[in-house]
Amino acid sequence: MAHHAQRIVIKIGSSTLTRTDSSIDTDYIATIAAQISPLIEEGFEVVIVSSGAIACGLEKLGIETRPDDMPSLQAAASVGQSALAKAYADAFGAYGLLTSLVLLTRRDTADRSAYLHARDTLSQLLAFGVVPVVNENDTVSVEQIRFGDNDTLAALVAVLVDASLLLILSDIDGLYDRDPSAPGAEIIPMVERIDRAIIDISGGAGTTAGSGGMLTKVLAARVMMAAGIRTAIVNGRSADIVTKVAHGALVGTVFEPRSLKHEITPRKLWLALGDSTRGQIVVDAGAAAALRERGSSLLSVGITHVEGRFDADDVVDIIDAKGNVIARGKSSAASDLISLACGMDRDQLAQNRLVCDLASQPVIHRDDLIVFE
Image 1: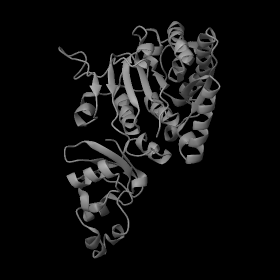
Image 2: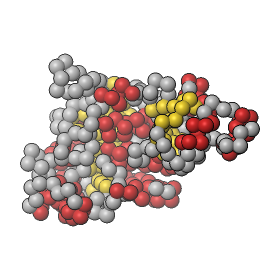
Image 3: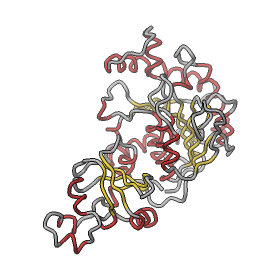
Image 4: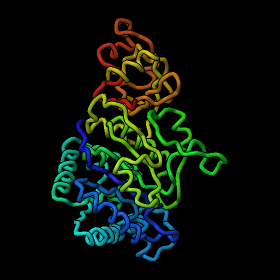
């Protein structure tokens, strides 16, 4: 996939976009517009993935404590989307730039046709010189079709528009090598491989303003690395941060992708950005190498054991011997059957009536599998 060299997706989190009283910081939006405007004059194309609709709606409705029930949150989102869109339109309008509001759910990108329509719409908006502002359609989203956090949505949009950079503006300076509050904690300036150690130090949920934390950002970056897209996690309140990163400055934590091994199709993107997996398949060194280096399907002969219980067509993580998640895919068989077939080659499978179906099909076909590293 040939990425657009000057196409950037900028994700702005709720904690960055709001003031200490959880109201929307319109002055901050103005500073973002002030940085993006000259970039567009230079030839950059920019898509913004913005959080903040619910926070904005709660402010407009005079609700000080975030509700727990879905109807109230969706009502707040309905009020907030228009107010948030106006804030962006006003800020960018001061520089003669048009913005548009694009609302997405998982359903909008679940199949190839919908995926292509979303891609073509965003591409045409950029061709018109518009700055699209993308958000999840919280007004109609339910658990089955939600992205859950805008880090995940931003990763999907970056692939949709063939971006060269995903810039995540957060309320933290980047990924630290331990708890940021611990003595001696330091920023990790560059990540070239997201292994178990990186996942472990990513921690849990972040501030109460948003739904994502550092872990969701790192998992989004993992997909970006597989897609060949550089990701930077930076403090969104740093002076001229968008300008600096757009021009190549190494600020915060940069996730540097290796060479792209294969195109991420809509189906594979859906798998990569999907909800939590149902189980894990642990593979030996030979199978891990075949997946990483040749983009092979996963065969039972390379499986050492299975963790968790899952059914056919469930999504599972593929783990190497060191405990690293190296891939994710849709299993063609249930966990009980795969457990019986571990280590068997095609001839052995064919001779066993319990597992003979796996002699004619892989455990996970390469079309239903995305490799992260």
